Image 1 (cartoon, helix red, strand yellow):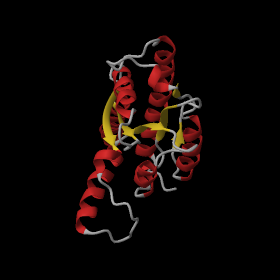
Image 2 (cartoon, helix red, strand yellow):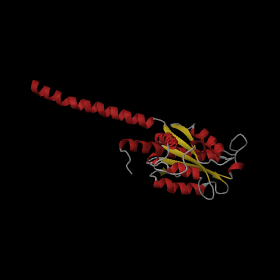
Image 3 (cartoon, one colour):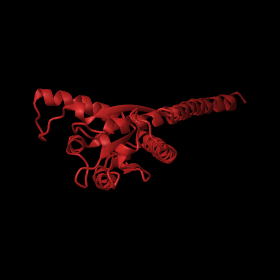
Image 4 (cartoon, one colour):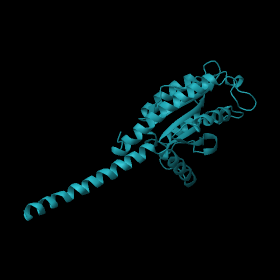
Length: 225
């Protein structure tokens, strides 16, 4: 009887350790699931007299009220990235690139706020995209566009192709502002917010779903595309 008891005790110890490890792993996964989604909001225009800050402020006033989201603004006009792509940028360029790469890598998801220039998106945004690769991978990207009659949607369609090449997932629903300048008052408030507010909620709900799903997937299986 003593030998049987001892044997049972001996086999029970690994099971107890395994149970504790499983519980710890489950707790860690639950913590990661509930952690706020870190969203980098990318302001794509550096044009003089740009309307982009009005749209960005409007969007962040909506995203900041959404549960489970933390946003950080990356303004291409303030990043001062090198404009000539190189495998050996100078010391100053390396320092700027390292700082921006760290901010992109820390993000769980992205929202690109873009105008439309000549049926596409601004050159500074392409420069930001092309300097980086793994930072975009296996993460969701949503789009808020503005412009004239098209509302920037042609720029968005081009961006979907670019981000697909970078192994990112573009969110289906967008927010677009047609003839944007006439839609906001002098204080940056939308004159008829019901429709845009609903569109922003749909975009953010999808972004959070994809952001959490892909964050969990990357944690369980690092992406190697």
